[in-house]
Image 1 (cartoon, chains in turn purple, red):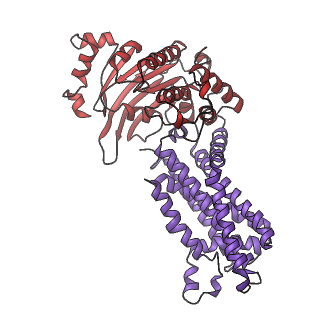
Image 2 (image 1 turned 90 degrees about the vertical axis):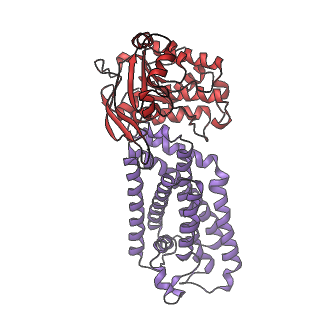
Image 3 (image 1 turned 60 degrees about the horizontal axis):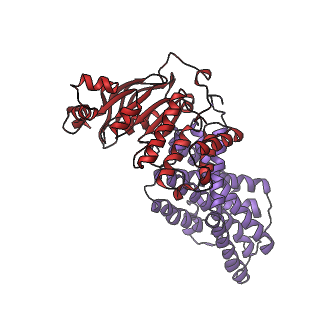
Length: 258
Length: 263
């Protein structure tokens, strides 16, 4: 073996370890969120949907699918990285990674891969179940892929940052329950903000997760409550900003190393 | 069967360089004590070096700094002539930490396999080395057991196997025999001796003075974040007025000594 490590090896193995963890804990990491989202579609879409008028030309049961996919993927990418990194810090087995001959970006992207992988399984499964049930189309596949890539990078990186700063498991779930979930709900998962009166419609536009939901909805349905360009621009800014933050923490060792 | 297959002299040799060179290393924890105080230390290649000191003397902080696990406040570290934070230096180091910091989601075999991958091995290389290490450390029967289900002794073996998997040239063992029974302690001594005979440089910290005297060629006593004495066990005893190593320890870094009062 050469003394100079192959540059992609550490990243590839760490990414594999993170994906391995997702699969080992499949009932918690993937099954539970898929079941929860499908229940939302059945209860809100199929049961109540017939009593709600069309929104922007789509049945209600179709309208809510993109938001539910976005919400489940955001939570999955976040939760995965926050819990994996916090556990590694708490049990100190993250030292095996920090001491290894890996560059900071390899560590950051290796951990990110787990969150992206988990979110893709969940997003893919919900879409595969919901599309035939509700008839949800994919109008802009390339833009949907772009939205999903940016969403998983952004929320996975947020999970990394929180996992690095958290002093307990409660901190990681606090951000999910008190910040991400309410903002996604208020971002128009179950309704079009156009239907809200002043000032709630305007207030909704301040919520960054409103643009996340709308970027994904534009990929699926070709409709959006905000300009698609603005939605994708804000989603990209969120993703790159959070990725830069997590990279900074790995590069400097702040909070990872005393 | 050998613990390592590496021919140390043939791989990227820096024979004129010490295995570990530390200059002016200090570490001040946030809202905490000065754990290392301008510490200087050279460990020659191929030596078996023991670091002794009471709790809080700076042993684990020193090891963590060398292994890139803490951010030193100042000072320089070189490993076989490479800057301590470089990938080359990290590749040449193996560490078994005091705490059983094993990945709770991985089996014994997986823990070794992934470690090899982090250190740049191919799957085939890592797999072959993992099999070898499991055999050497009598872990083969536990290959599919996850770390939390291992006994304390088995965890110690796995920590050592993991530290040695990538065939490091400098192995750092932080109290490797703490809390293990006498039989396993002697077994671990045999592993470590064999490793040293094969040319690996070893830095061992321990609270067991008889262990240090039995294994180490060169000893340093650390207190208050500084090396306060360094010599062979015999030399230390002679230069500190005779008696046992325990007497020397108590005089130099034990409670009430000037250096010990620092830490």
